Image (cartoon, rainbow over all chains, first blue to last red; front, top):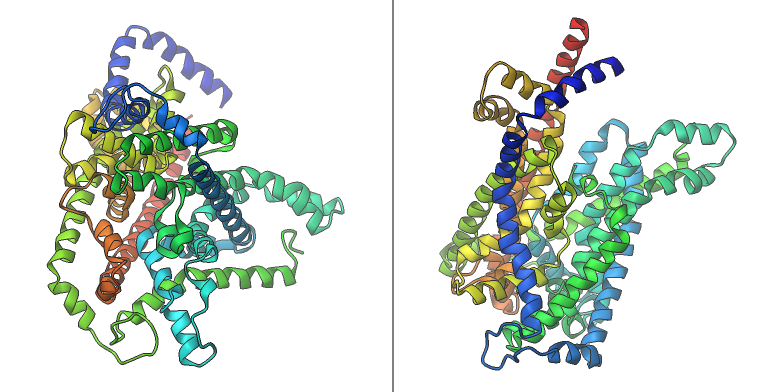
Length: 302
Length: 281
């Protein structure tokens, strides 16, 4: 194997020199269209939002020109900053709940379920790949004031009035978002547990460690990359989430994302909405800079 | 003795698993059951079996139009995303180039941008350059968010195809296009199919970007979202939901089964290929 590699490598290096410019053309040809697309419709728009939020360009009649006014307003207003922290708290709660629910499932499938594991994994994943909005709708139908649970309880006479904490509550938001994300979180944890060498567990046991000790000192630390990946991939999209909270959270479901969205639908203060959107992007960028090294994006894909 | 779990622990884990499966599927089953309840409200008591909500939505032109627009947007998204993702994934797997980390970072970045921020950004972009909102502007945004998912579907497959097959084709005198058409493309095909379906599903379900950049013609998720405040429409909306959930579940399962079968075939083929290589050496 080793000799094959050296004999193989050597001629390739010398042969590639005359063709280098041709190879470069092929590579740039392959990359050109997808990169141009993402630069035009992803990078440029994000830059534009930043420029627009400080008035480097104006679109509406009441837009201010070249001013930090919207940013200053955002940072000095208690309402919007506390909405941001409310969204962060929701994200944290939802990602922790999802990880706690998903971990035992991933553990079972990766280390115990044996040959059936891929089929059972598919059973968990299928709901995630069907419509997100329709699954949230299902919960709205179930938990609502006149929903399935409350109407059932009233019909059989267990309660006289609808149970209020079921609908339009923080409980409803957490339950539904955890429901939405659990399958997605289970994936990276499953991948990290599955790639774990089972001989390590046997060695630990042979050396006299109890199962719990083995789990704490071997299995859990080795699955941390999967846990962090799952956590981040829930945490980040959930900070901007406003659809589910609005549908099942009632008045308490007004989130940072809702504040951004309402600047474009009702408030028509686009510049302020852009400043908040830009702040959200910065916040995500900071998170990624901190946790990015734990992320192996591929673990989610497979 | 099983090192991973005790027998009691095993029972607990299986119980947790089946409770979670129940938690995942019960809402969908409830939706299905209540779509046949003969009642204006989606709730108990059970008033009898009816298919009238299905008949109502089939006559509701607003629903049908929004579904049609969703299909068009999702089809445009799926085709263009796949066309962009194929060269991107080939470059990422087969090529060495400057700033590869940066390039793959840009390509995967849409995975982590909050959709409400991307929706805002696209709204500002289209207003700045003066493009009116239409199904096309929705598709443009959907391609951005579907692209990383499509690339991540193609890359693992491409990594399993031995580069030696392409090199052999080039050595035998085939140009890069012939090599792609005859060797790489057919071997990638199952993953290309998955990437296509995934992009379609992502677009068909997407509501945030669609609500930021849609004009008069709205997609089904945007329509659905606007209707959820009107309980009167709910029973027929739920009938549509049941149909869509059923179709997407069938498609997802079929594509997953297909992917596994072809992956196994590829592994068997390349295993034979490796053995031959060894015996020749």
